[in-house]
Every structure is written in structure tokens, then in C-alpha cells.
Image (cartoon, rainbow, N blue to C red; front, side):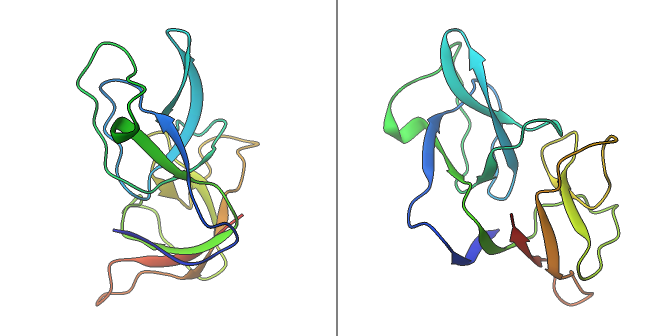
Length: 136
């Protein structure tokens, strides 16, 4: 689940998906050069671009420039809710958010100097599996 509560912009950016990468709403993505095209890829903690808004998997050998195979990337300042995150990382109000090695949001800094992507507004609770955060 990924839901935007408030945002600055109206529309996401759309980029071709890197082949054979599973994109889930709420994942962190980055842009890379792949076979001569600029494509979205799961973020490994470096160069985060934004959050995925749609589910996407491209079973092909090269990027497809068809709009139905594009990944929605929300990169504007926003308040959002998601249940796609590192379940092993404890979360408290005002904790910083980073991209983990697997592309999911985490409060664990993956390496020294990692870019903070946002802050927790409301942490997940026993009766609510999602958190609310500010994306910077």
C-alpha cells in the first residue's frame, strides 16, 4: 500500500522500468543508464530519486518505451502512508528514513553519509501496519 496524503506536485514522473526488476508501490527508486536508456531501478541506498507509485514488472531483455510499462516516480515533497518498509527496523516519531539495500524504506542508515529521504510522522502500531512520513 502506498497512498499520498498531501503533496506539492500533481503528477508523478514516468520512466521506463529496468527489465526483470519487481517494483512495488512505496519502494525507493533511482535512475540508471541501461543499454543506452535512462530507466528506473530499485535503489540500493545510493542516488535515491523518489518513491514508486505503481506495481510493475517487465519480463523482457531491454527497456520498453510504451507508457503502460513505465514506473510512476513520486519525487516531490509529500506526506505519504505505506506498509512497504524494513520490518526489522524500529520506527519512532521523527526518525529519519533511508533507502535500504533492497529498495525499501528503513530507519537504519545503510552506510555512513547515506542521504536521509524523509522523517516518520506516525510510526506503525500493533493495530496498524503502515506508517505516515514526510518525504523530503
